[in-house]
Image (cartoon, rainbow, N blue to C red; front, side, top):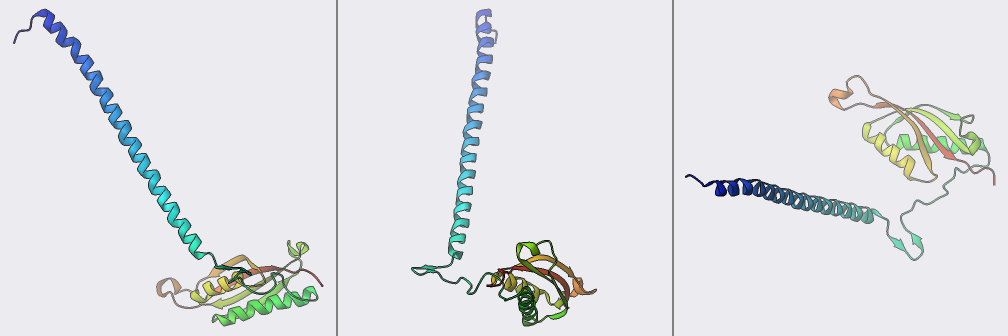
Length: 184
């Protein structure tokens, strides 16, 4: 197939134009696919956020006309006429919680000279033995009830064979603080 020179010139001039046209079409197809992919990704993010919002709203305590129900009863502050009485009440609450969840108090100390003591906070340092599930319950009970208590420090030591068997009591050192309002 011998093409005459004018046809050969025309065929060679159309080839670059066709390649450019094909390149533009491929770029446009890529942009369309990319945009659709991004749109579907955003839609999935919105669905995930909506699911999470629904979960959070279902956990919200029911409200009544009188106010919130399910809120812990009592004062958010440590009760006591003096700092010593308030410290003893804090120590008694923590000791009772440790025993309630199957633990043993080894030692305890009320820290009235801590960094937060000037702000009205009382701190206790308690050492005890407790099982793993008991520790989880103890931490929840301590921070969820009234008065408001805060676990400032938690140090956990496991017994020698604990990793293999998962049984035995953990030795823990807790630093717990609560705010004392002062004498009334």
